[in-house]
Length: 93
Image 1 (spheres, rainbow, N blue to C red):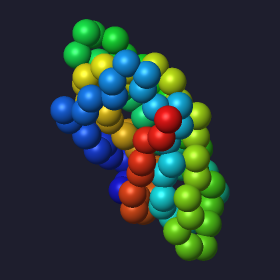
Image 2 (image 1 turned 90 degrees about the horizontal axis):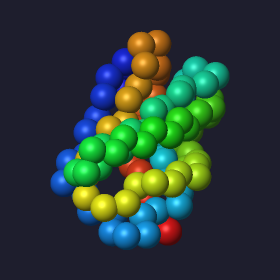
Image 3 (image 1 turned 30 degrees about the vertical axis):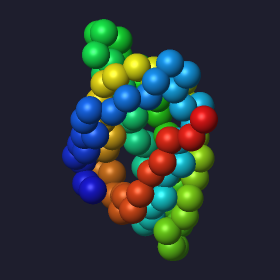
């Protein structure tokens, strides 16, 4: 992904919500900043940033998150200049 956005719609995080997100990917440049933005159905917006550092191969990195509760959508935003090969992600309690 190079300077783009990926949206995951119709997600229910329940009352507790996740405390972390694990992202698997590859970065050929020193640092890629990924904005992880949650838009709740009740109007709340929660933003977290994940800095994914350079790697020769795919790697898994876990980042703390909070505030993702209830129903809404999640956007992964990659700023211009980003060079990130996104493989998968998972939210965890």
